[in-house]
Amino acid sequence: MGSKYGLSAWHKIKHWLNTMRPDQTLYFNEREVWFCYLGANVGYEQNGRGREFLRPVIIVKKYNKNLFLGIPLTSKVKSTPYYFPLGVIRGSTSAAILIQTRSLSSRRLINKIAKIDVCTFNKMKTAAMTCVFGD
Image (cartoon, rainbow, N blue to C red):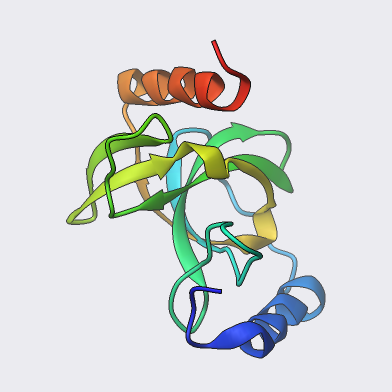
C-alpha cells in the first residue's frame, strides 16, 4: 500500500473530500504543479504520502473547472521511458511518472507550488503520449 497510515485514514480524508469539503472555485491551469490528495491506491498505483496522502501533480489537460488530467511527480528520478525529468521543483529534483497519468477531480487539489516552462511541458506531453499510446 505504500503508506504507514493505512486505508482507514485515507477513507476519512476521502469522505471529507466528497461530502464535507466546501465547494471552492480553484483557478488552476495546464503546466501548473499542485499538491494533490492522491490517496492510498491499489497495487502499483502511485500513492499520496504522509498523513494527508499528498503528492505533487502536474496538470496536463484541464477539462473543466472540476476535472483535469494529471501526472504524479516523484523525487526518485529513474532512467526509464516511464519517467520524465522536470528539474528542481521546490528544492527537490522531480520527475513525472508518465505511466501514472490519470483523470482527477479538482477537489483533490490543495495549493499551487510551481509552473513548468512551455518547452519542458511540451516535451513531457510528447513523452507521455509515447509512453501511454506507443510510437
